[in-house]
Length: 262
Image (cartoon, rainbow, N blue to C red):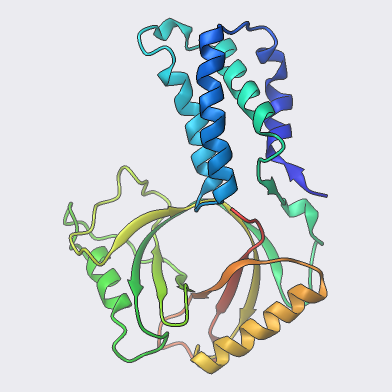
């Protein structure tokens, strides 16, 4: 069963929203916002869920700009309730962990929180000898940043193939760093971004991650998902947990695929 986020929020806010009578100016203002968010949902751009939630919260600070005493539970509740109700038909339908079996033979379903990452994008095939992704990311965490601070190395290192010749390598930042506190990279090749919450199917395997090995695992992964009638969105992300000294048979690698279409 699919759960619609709009319904959940609307139920929570109904009691507050009904106690508030909005002005016609506020309704007109919100109507223009509805159009903006309907376009955003239709485009299904990256991070649409976060953009919608942050946008709705931001509205409470925009209207009216010179009358902050209006910013309270009743008005906030009305705005949320109104916007969610108006968008309920087009709001992305999000699967939850409860929509899947407790276990599968060759993969698992995991609910991942937001992840703050440092990334480098390369325009050549995965595994090519002149790949400098790791070098650039290591340069950032070893102190070439705005605070001259070393950042702890975490696992896994992830690689997402964006096209036949373009892929993105990412280091996941330690959980005590936030987007506000994390140092900025001095190296223009390095980009900091937040990967929003995601429900993912995860396939684990061992051995070295040659192009042939990863391709074979991806094909088998997709066949398993098709067998169970599970739809994936986007290309699988390769996640590697071990240093180069770990023997092939003991290495932990994973493939992640998104189960919600943002």
